Length: 124
Ligand SMILES: N[C@@H](CCC(=O)N[C@@H](CS)C(=O)NCC(=O)O)C(=O)O
Image 1: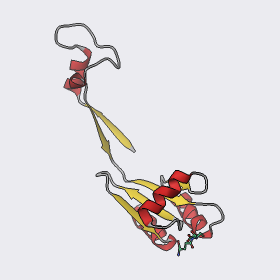
Image 2 (image 1 turned 60 degrees about the horizontal axis):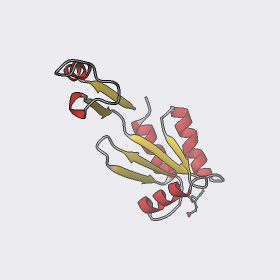
Image 3 (image 1 turned 90 degrees about the vertical axis):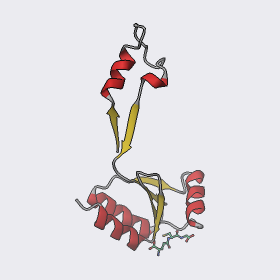
Image 4 (image 1 turned 135 degrees about the vertical axis):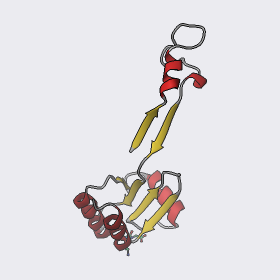
């Protein structure tokens, strides 16, 4: 989830720049317009594929807990499979990829470990 914070004085400057007049949307110099994005939650991506019972187990838990997880079927997108192989060294699925607010990437392989992680961290 992305939370957008608008810095009020900057917003005022955006609307009324020095010298008068009004900037049009999209034409405003960056210095007059400041948006701060704060990512509140980790982004979760599940690498999975068809005909995989381990993936089904993990997906069932995701559905049961109602966790927000992007699911990437590696049989549907070669780029996703390449990402998985780059990150993990193999295309074995399921693998959960967790991207933290600070931009760190953590890979969690093994269905049991993924399910444990989800229950411990996303069971609200
Ligand atoms: N112990 C693993 C087993 C995962 C596994 O065997 N996945 C199969 C699909 S169901 C797979 O990706 N096999 C192809 C491969 O290992 O390259 C787990 O529980 O996640």
